[in-house]
Figure 1 (cartoon, rainbow, N blue to C red):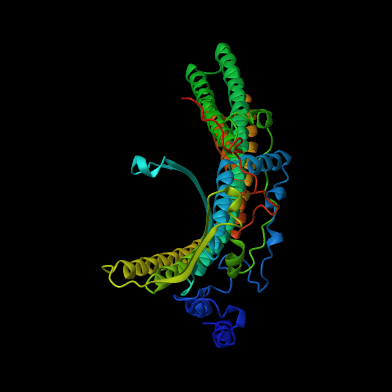
Figure 2: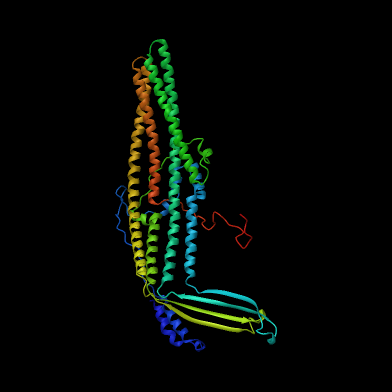
Amino acid sequence: MTKTAFAMNLSIGTIPARLAGLPRLAGVSLMVVALAGCAVGPDYAAPGQFLPTNWGNAPKTNKPLETRQLAQWWKKLGDRRLNEIVDRAVAGNLDVASAKARIREARATRRQAIGGLFPQVDGSGAATRSRTAAATSASGGNTTGNLFQSGFDASFELDLFGANARNVEATTYGVDAADEDLRATLLTLIGDVATNYTEARGAQARAALARRTAASQRETERLTRNRFTAGTASALDVERAAAQAATTEAAIPTLEAAYAQSLHQLGILTGEAPTALAGILGSGGPIPAARGTPPAGIPADVLVNRPDVRRAERQLAQSTAKIGQAEAALYPSVSLTGNIRTTALKTGDLAKNSSIGWSFGPSLSVPIFNGGELRAAVEVAEAQRDQSDAALRLAVLTALQDVENSLVNLAKERVRAGKLSAAATSYREAARLSRTLYQSGAASFLDVLDAERSLYSAEDTLLQSRVAVTSNFVSLNKALGGGWDKPVDVLLPRLVDTHTGPHLRAAY
């Protein structure tokens, strides 16, 4: 009970004289109102989190990571088309549209809960025309008359033990959780767009490499056939050359299918048709290159920067408030009800020459026996709070794992890409030398085939590694909580209804 409630309770003895005419119950009602500052159930406090002081796979630092350092991280890839697709996805993605609708739902639910703190007033009116037949013919004719009534009914449930206040508290936390849900949706969306775009560019680059390699191998086959015609090569060499070219060509349809799948997924992510972005991506482009490594900050940053962690924390707060809401049902509830009625034979007399009646008073409801239902509801709420607590702790641990994994993957894949680049350079020189030696008769045709096969494999693996480097860069930014930092309009519904007032029902 707050100090304000105590002050109100002590001041009841100084009720002004103009209230002396009210029923004695009114004074009792005011005393009950003074108790409205009470609440039951636990008050929420953010749980402590035991976190490491530094990342295990990043340089040690005591400097927290600022949110602005992660904002619009995809622009660091330097790809104008990717930036355009991200903007289209944020504007049109259907998961984002659902998250916006959940925010509107949460806000409306909160307004509903706030409405429970105020009195409810309803107006009513009635008009009756009646005819009374005479009992006997000697008493006269029939009597016909009108009766008009109007009035107001009011009720106010006193939030004696804070049930309604806890409901408002819970729905307020629900609004916060919905806001974080939208941020988490945007974070996931942008990461998926960047990853699929990178994979699409990677598939295009690998298909182009396969076409160039197959063309070179077909040229090798042509030269081998010429040597066979001249008698300096065997039919076996010709067939081996043709088989290698066909094997390389066989990889092209698979890569084209992989590109198409990434293209279609990007279309869905933007809320458009699967092939809507074919014009943007069809002309080809380089694989986005990750520039540098985003600062990792300290592990405690995930509590601030990760929207999924913040959402889980707000959901824990909401579950805690619901315990108090359920526990308040164990205590008595008091309502104030009143009404005023006026009755007249003419509508013009309702406000003057009419009979007026009124009633006012409190009503008390005390739970006596309910078979343990109310106590079980409290235990349900407590169990749900424990689930939310476990979900929050798991979200924190998962966030830490995501960052550590992404740091390792990005660093190691960059080392791997460097080694693959060196290997591709060596294989490229080996292929050139083997071809030169073969033409001079100093090397066998198997050496040429092996060198060309090894070169294609090395260059294709290098392209896959470059895709992996960028994908790991994307994953690290997602793990750190980087995402969309511009305002998002959540007020405008995707579907706007018209003609919702009274109207003729359409025939079916």
